[in-house]
Each structure stands twice: as structure tokens, then as C-alpha cells.
Image (cartoon, rainbow, N blue to C red; front, side):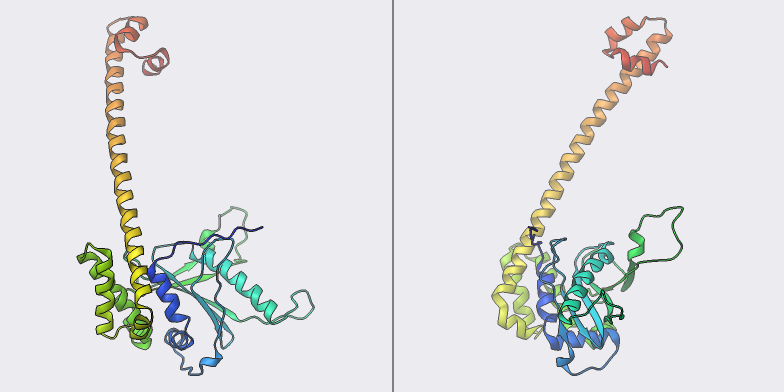
Length: 299
């Protein structure tokens, strides 16, 4: 039996999924990216995976329109392995598509599948360009006898959706623009307010006042505030743990440095003793070096 593992996801992931699981918002995002003008929401078929069991993580949203399988994922950290994850996601999605459409992949007739498009929406705090392409082929080990042809490749398009980036795209998709502004406002309050509960409340109240993501915030105000608070507390804990581990590492490094320095000084003394004609036994007695170490020093 396969064990299902649920990953820890922060409020930005969950909110992104809430917004674009709505067909109207998903279609608006699709039109903005593909520069199309579809208006019929019923043309969208949502295929969101609850979880990819082998990875124990969820993708954010995928949908089919105009025979294109659109896989959209949110990412808060830099991850060069997105094409690998995308390959696994798409494998699961295509398996479901084949099953639902009763396609025979063992027959003599070529089956027809929707073309995949994999877009990663990034809004972490590490600086990144507006657009970046990441290829699956970059993960493959090179071999001197390998073929020149690419037998399998997948491209992930990473779009930076932090506030101030990809402004043309933002103007074409109001939900994405408001999401970007919301995250920026949350960060501002988290930076200025030590109390995570108050920071979350102030951020949500400011966005409601400015009519940013108004409908979803009014509908799920309490849940979103709690998500922000919990994720902020977890992030703060991780930072404190990292600082503590870094301090421990520095102390251990200084201790190792002092030990190494003492050893090197003893070795230098041993060399001078040897040059002055003292026996190895006398040198070991006076410096405390063992025979193996002394033999290496005097080579």
C-alpha cells in the first residue's frame, strides 16, 4: 500500500490555488499568458491533482482548453527541479485523461493528446528575472557515448509575479495583479509588526479597504488570516533554527581551528627538534605526538 504524504504549503500557495481554481479567473490567466480572448468559461475542463503520491506534494491547478493541457504551479522558492516535477505531474494527468476518454494506447491507431504547457509562477524573495526557461534535459547525466538527439525533454516557463514584475501580464489579468499586491502588503505588515496575528489582520483589512481580492477575503477572511499567521510563525521558527545552527557551526569551527593550530605548532616544534638531532622517542615525549603523526611530519 502506498503511503500518502501531505506537504507543508504556505499561504501564498493555498491562496493562489483558491483564486485560480475558479474557471473565470483561470480563463483570464490563460488569456493573459496566451494572448487569446476566450470568454466561454464552460470550455475549460479543470484537472487539478489532489496529490502526486510519489512526491507527496500537490500541484496547484491544471486545465484543458483548446486542446492544450495547461499546468500552472506556484513556487515560493528557487527550484531547478521543476521540470522533473512537471514530468511526473503530466504523467499523472495524461493517465487520467486517457482513462476518462477511454483511449486505447495499445491499439494500432495513434491516440490524440492535448499539448502540454507548464508554467511556474514564482514569488519568492530571492531575486529572479521576469521570465526564465528551465529544461528537463539539464537534469540528465551526461555520458561520452550518449546520443546527440534529445529523446525526452520538457520546458518549464518560470514567470516572476512579485509586485513590480511582468506588469503587462498583470494588467491583462486582474486576479493575478491583485494577488501580487496582496502578497506585497502581507510582507510589509510582517516586516513592521512583530505580532503575527496582528500583522495578518492588518494586511487583510488593508486589502479589503483597497478592494484587493475583495470577494475571497470577505468570504474566507478568518481562514486566510490564520494561514498567514501560521506560515509566518513557521517561517520565523525556521529562521531562528537556521541562525542557531549557524552559530553552533561557527563555534565548532573556531574550536576545530584552535585544535588544528595547536597540532600544527607541535608539528613545527617536532621538526626543529629533529633538525637539532633529538631522537624520535624524545620528540614524542616532549610534544605529545604519536608515532604515526610524527612519521608523517618528518617525511
